[in-house]
Image 1 (spheres, rainbow, N blue to C red):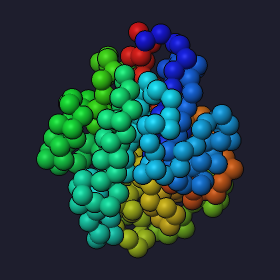
Image 2: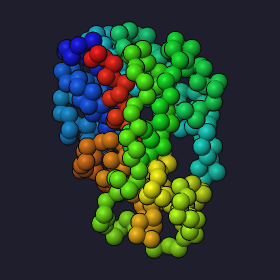
Image 3: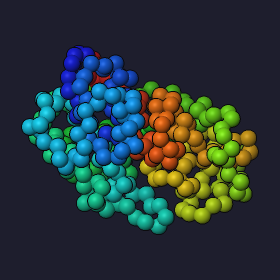
Length: 295
């Protein structure tokens, strides 16, 4: 597919990582239709891409109301598919969970719009049974890519697509030391004590705060951090040990960890920035896949 004018529909669009990735892949001439309900994410999208056509709730989208769609993008909420447990609450109800059953809305719209190309993303930590259900429905096997090839974040994901995809992205060898700010504001530092685990450990320290052990992890700048999540506020942000002191990563650093242009999410609170970035895509990984459209 050459770089011609075409129509893109992005479901669960968030802050429009799909548009960022299209531009990164060299695809710039398109109409972009987005389904999103988070007002803060939509504000960021419209601030950066004012020509985006916002369609609202995915349940209300009908193919007859749209022009022919050439590319369908989407990654339905992953909370029920992930096997991670936070605060002793299990979220892995699978495709029947309140959030992850939205996959079936993606499938409905895929069948209604019949685009030439599609891309669907979700967590690689889902059960094999859930993966197989999605593969059967989309009639293809997923590609598995970890974002740690393009950034300093472990983010293991499945990508189902009929776009011709090259081999894995080139490993850029990026670690946290490459993306951290040198003089972050005082509000990002912790005063609490911590247990030091060793200079060469991925998790270099554990912070003395309340909550699940995952929240207490303080990462080594020599390595990668864990997966950014859409959990809001509190102590859920990823943490690093810098100059011998623990601190949470800043929203700017979250942008860098998702290959998002610096300042893209400015204009909303830190909490909302963390949330939408944790909920988003790693831009360079999606661009790597979308480059198959221009070859």
